[in-house]
Image (cartoon, rainbow, N blue to C red; front, side, top):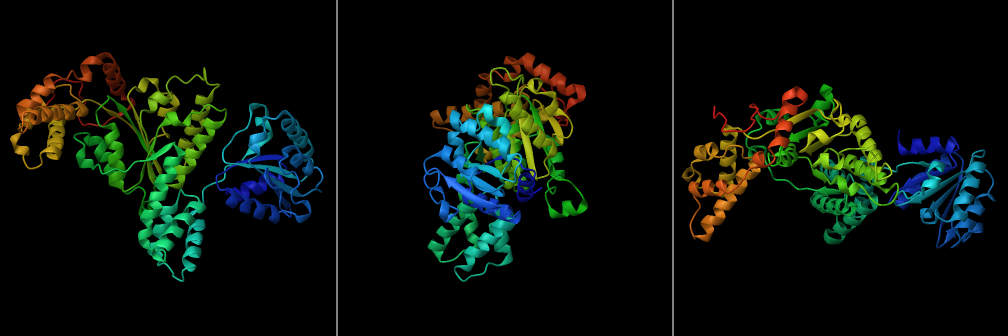
Amino acid sequence: MSFEAELSLTLRARYPLIYIPSHEEERAEAVITDVAKSLGRSVFIWDFVDGYQSNPTDAGMGKRNPLQALEFVEKIPKGAVFVLRDFDRFLDDIAIARKLRNLARKLNREPQNLILLASQINIPDHLSELFAILEFPLPQPSEIKREIEQLAATTGDKLDAQALDELVRSGQGLSLERIRRVLAKAIAANGQIQAEDVERILEEKRQSIRQTQILEFYPSTIEITDIGGLDNLKEWLLRRGGGFSERARKYGLPHPRGLLLAGIQGTGKSLTAKAISHHWHLPLLRLDVGRLFAGLVGESESRTRQMIQLAEALAPCVLWIDEIDKAFAGLDGRGDSGTTNRVFGTFLTWMAEKTSPVFIVATANNIRTLPPELLRKGRFDEVFFVGLPSQAERLQIFTVHLSKYRPHNLRAYDCDRLAYETPDFSGAEIEQSIIEAMHLGFSQNRDFTTEDILEAASQIVPLAQTAQSEIQLLQEWAASGKARLASRQNVLGGRGNPN
């Protein structure tokens, strides 16, 4: 259901108090006005500085007086919609709270509605049951297209279809005001809107995402070939590479939903998330789940909804949730008034019901702490266990890293020997041994050698030894059939088999 249809239904159902969180005040008010007028309702808009402004006879009414703004509602005949800007700031006032309760009972019987318009949800607990919350979505592609065409018309130019489509796609996830600003800058710089302005819009998008302080726009240049081993996982990903194409839609395929990568630290889980984004040519958004949680009641849930809205507006995209086990471990609601449970519930419902092309890549080091609901079929397309690399995979990993650091001198290194002499090493520990060897060679004013790498490796105590019991539990969990193996060989440590 569109926002307009949902708002119309809510108004007709005589919900007395409606709360709409949005940073796009002007656009939201235009939509509210259109919907109200389609129902034959008058619209009155109030703010603290200017009071009511919609009707000349009532101009300034309630100025700097929020209680008077509510009293004014009772003076207007039936059939009106009142929009109160930033009214969330006054909800803790006992007089305001009491008046809202009285109005809610009265408006229940009349075709009148009170809409609070604020930048975020900020409702005290004692009033939470009074409000119906409607999420105002970011602009749809059709709205962005119309805005760009109107701006282009001001310069007397007409964009070709391909350039227009690229600009519209790059603008998804931004407010109309931001799109206007960045394109106005393009017109000021070049006198017109060009296809090259896509990069300007993308930079504005990065700024917008950074300002949310929830999602991080994560540019990635990692190739699938930069990952050593994990052949089963790579094969699975390559088969789904075209899953977001129009051809896949015509075939009847649903959008790929995502995957959970569980396993030992340093085995390439995060690297895989970056490689997926680059290989599929999709933007990569990194979610720090800890940033969803805030001190104010209701704000964490609001941030979660904002994150979902932004990710869906930027779709198709890859949403990378690193170390999801730390965020949702041991859900019991103790100590946070159940906030963690509510955030998790919202997130879980979205994962199960989403139809947007947002591919979720979640990584976890300790799978046993995750709630079982998260692992149920339907949340992810697949759950993969990423274990310690076999000797053959360690050979690939050494080759990948040495090709990066010494591309013209790779044959100088005995990668077979290095792979054999590093049992139980993860990919991260292999890379660290090479870097340590480089420091050793650099300090002696010479190139590093195979012997330097082996010397560095001998100084590293692998995680497989320091956290042996935890890793054993993870391997037993994977062996029980609860996850697919990312590698063709299930390696429990040791020297492995090069064949």
